[in-house]
Amino acid sequence: MAAHTTVRRWPRFVAYLPVQCIPCGETEQRRVAGETLNVAAGGLALLLDETLPLGIPVLVEICQEEPVRGHVVWTDQRVRSLLGTKVAHGVAFEQPVDPTRVGRWVHRGERRSHVRAQVEIDVECTHGETTVDGKCLNLSQGGMFIATESPIAPGTEVTLHFKLPDPFDPLSVPARVAWMSREEIEPGATTGMGVLFLDLKPLEAAVIGSLVDRLDAEASAPTSSQSSPPSS
Image 1 (cartoon, rainbow, N blue to C red):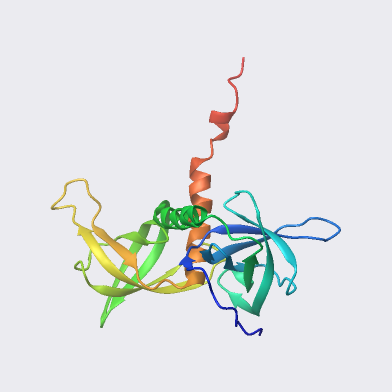
Image 2: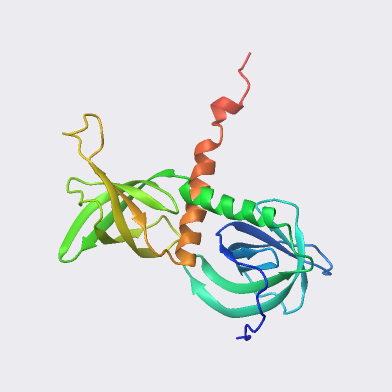
């Protein structure tokens, strides 16, 4: 594993965003998909599907924006993660980007964390010796709503155990109950609780973000009946 001895001149901000890394100088242009871990005006850290050579020049495309040219300055060991086999990389930009662009990336990361997708996932919620079973009805990088007949009081810290759709592995995530609802108090409401994730690990955030992005895109896509012209 390469030592990370570079002195950081630019403040770094946590941001989990889809990224494409394009190695320069190869015979055929190809794109290596990944996810950012943190961003700064001078560079970023990211997870990629394969290991790129140290020093190789790359074009980094974040959120389909105009690519930024940089160089790979460090790589980490290849690890088996919830997203499959990934490799952490550090990329230093050849020229610092405008801080307002970094702010836009951070804002997109924050906005992405609040995008909610409709999904039905069984969830086991534990706190102390108590276990509550429920079903997640919507999911974001920031938390989920769990339908359950036994909602837990707001402010309680819990551990959520749930399995996302294949190919992802099961997750155990610390969370805090933010609010609860009861049908007998609010007619028409679903009895359950809203929970916020606590200390979500980068790989967990990447997994949830990837799933939410896919579900949100599928929900927003026009159906065949909407996209096809009426028959004569």
